[in-house]
Length: 76
Image 1: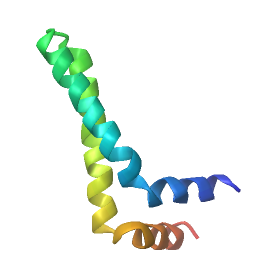
Image 2 (image 1 turned 135 degrees about the horizontal axis):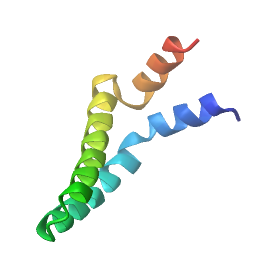
Image 3 (image 1 turned 90 degrees about the vertical axis):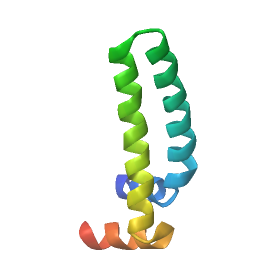
Image 4 (image 1 turned 90 degrees about the horizontal axis):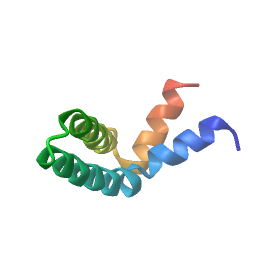
């Protein structure tokens, strides 16, 4: 198993890691925002936006099979 196979595996299962990680990071962002640690809150908001973008691209590219097919065509 090489690095590209690992990348395809991670891309194929984006909703299973991005949704929980996005929700947890949003909770941390809100907690740090209330405690008035704005810089740390912005960091967690950035992670939340990354997860949201990853899930949106996952569905735009066609789900698990579509994203693997598109990435394979793009890098081969």
